[in-house]
Length: 46
Image 1 (spheres, one colour):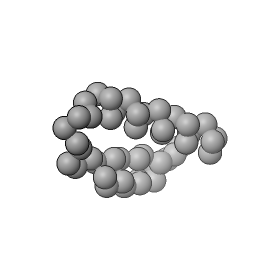
Image 2 (tube, one colour):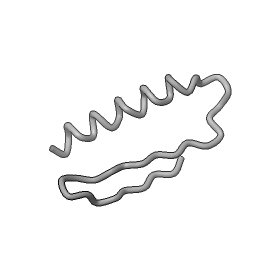
Image 3 (cartoon, one colour):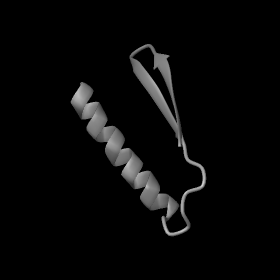
Image 4 (cartoon, helix red, strand yellow):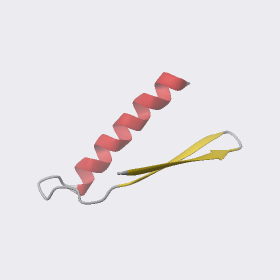
């Protein structure tokens, strides 16, 4: 996983690149888990 942060006028853009996701994990499940984590992080820092 590679994460980058980019300052924006009203916040920060977070970009996450995943590599070598195990074959047993569906991409849509990985995306849902990632979005859930980012939503929790946003709630914490707002």
